[in-house]
Every structure is written in C-alpha cells, then in structure tokens.
Image (cartoon, rainbow, N blue to C red; front, top):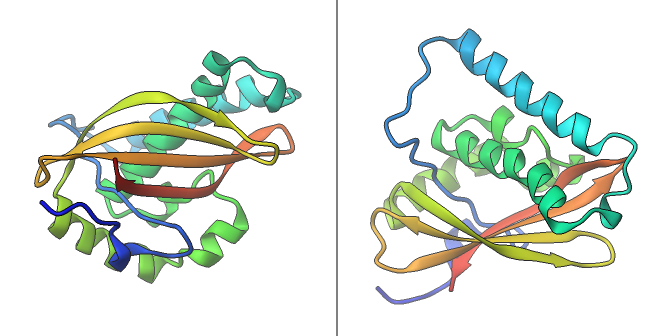
Length: 167
C-alpha cells in the first residue's frame, strides 16, 4: 500500500480513526454511561488542582488513556458526543459532526477497523503534550501514527487535535 497522508480526512492537521472493540459489548446503555462516568471521575480526580506540565509521564499517560479511548470509541460507534467528550470548543468548531461522520466512513473504507495500539511516548511542548501511539488497522499492512495533542485547560487535559498518519 502506498504510504500517504489521508488528505481526504484533513481538517487543519486532523485525521480520524476507527476503533474495533474486539468483540466486547456492553449489554445496556446504562452500563455504558456508568463506565463512561467512572472514567470521567478518574480523569477528574487525577487532574484536579494539578499542574499537568509538572506531572511525570506515567501520570500524564493515566490522564491521556481515557481520552484516547473516548476518541476511538466515539469513532467506532459514530458517536460525535463521545468523540468530543474531552475536546476544546475550538476542536468541535473545526470538526463539526457532519465532517466527523463523512471522514469516519472514508477512513473505514481506506484503512478498515482499528485493531490495536501501542504507546510510544509523549512529546512535551510548552503549550501542549503530544501523546503518540502506533496503531494497526484491518485493511492496512502498515502501522500508523496516532497522535493526540492535549492542552492543560484549568487542570484538566482537553483535546486540541487528533491525527493519524503513516509511520
């Protein structure tokens, strides 16, 4: 497969991904909501009254994991609300629901379902942290970078940008 940036999905440096839930299913909407609330509470408890920039990488990753999972779950279920749960208002403006849905359909056609991710590390910038995973998709023999750009918004991580690009 020719490596290229998926330009059909581009919003200013934005790419979307598709999550494959690995056959896991939750029997009721209430269970999903309860699980989501627990993750939100865990994220809030870790990040409240903390200067995120001063945290060690392992604690930053504990804050970032529920966010990437929410993004990927939102994409897999075509659930814009879940996808943007941790997003800054500007992110939502740059990725309206109609664009989100069409990009997901195109990405699924091109790469297939998300299969797995491996954490590679975090790049600490002055204004944001960039968490990097390599991801595998069902229709691609190649692995892809998944980058989650998070900013500290009053002691909580918020999504500034999310991208998928070739390694």
